[in-house]
Image 1: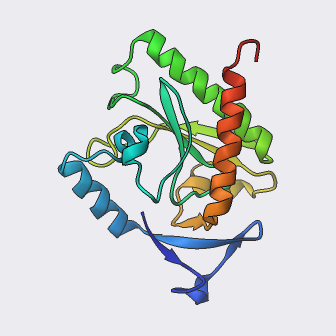
Image 2 (image 1 turned 120 degrees about the vertical axis):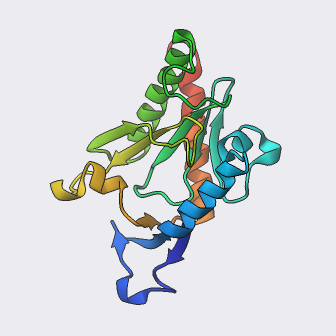
Length: 191
């Protein structure tokens, strides 16, 4: 997604979410980039699974033998995270054995526990978006909805909007560290 910092490029529409600055995504540029990368056989999620090929704009919070957890570059909600299998898969169910799928769902459960511990959450949204024409690599979105959001701004409205939260890299790194530590702790026996 191509950002537009609202405080610089569009001051007339600058806004904040819970006291945070927001930017606006250039949806046309995002779609063009994602589809071009897909057509060229590139997969940014596969690049994330290897520390050597992780793009600078991506913030990885956790990796293990099954999955990778990362912060989307343009999060709609504060602790919004994505979880994807390490191996390239394009079908959310049929590309996995039952054991592999359950291993991923266990990690989604753990990530949900961590996210709701580090940020106030009225409802944790968990869903899988993607497209064979765009980001084909299977991934799950975990989006903690903060308390007090009016009903009309919840559910799809909370994640399907052109605005994203501007979160400084230092804070993104600190959040990633907390998520990684939480995931690691929950992976220990008896957690």
